[in-house]
Length: 327
Image (tube, rainbow, N blue to C red; front, top):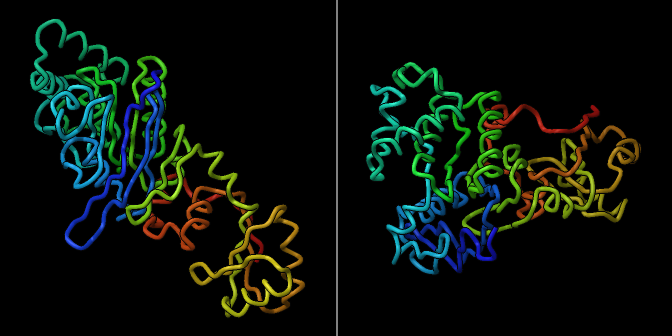
């Protein structure tokens, strides 16, 4: 691992008309780490991915990848990165091997070098027995593995993945992360991915949390959770605004209304269940508490939930959030 960052983003801003997609963004990604860029839809993830992959020049600021400027040294950058887009990039009518062979030709690979690299990746991604099958016949998880093989074929030092778990079931998602971890450990490849799945981001070494184009936080998952001031307590009530005022007055703690529920953070959250119910008899419909999560970090920074994370997306990420409920 070198002292210079694999990615260095300095004071980058970008607009689409009147809408600001990125606002004075600064972040650095270390070589050899798995780094997640996390945010709701519209948070700036896609714009940042397009800048990093040289598809879009920054309107202001600078982006350097492995020491090269993405604007003035575009071709040098493209030789060093592998990209897996969210939208499928495979020719469904070609076989797995044919897709890889054509990808290799785009990077000037041929002959024994291409064959050896192709065979190695097919083995490592457990695709050897599928090499002669048409992509159209493969499951979503297998297609994603072929996409990864394409992105890694030329031996990049940096792998960029845009929403890599899209369309994958939990088993395929685990396989994907197992491979990314192996790739980082054995080949020293830096992996940067965008995701709207908070549970997926927990697996990264570090996380950049974006919202409305601004960097809310950047640290390890544990360090981010540690910034939350205790267990997250959520109270469902018919009059949440009035109840929040009374909780603040009664207990002298910060209680806010988030998505029509009262939310507060306190150490030993389980001890607050009976205390709250006794203090406001008949006023509380339900109380839940959970250990701090990345969503709690997001709420702490913004005052609202991870708004664009749908129930379907949460289910795809592995089910309900941690927590205990008391009705």
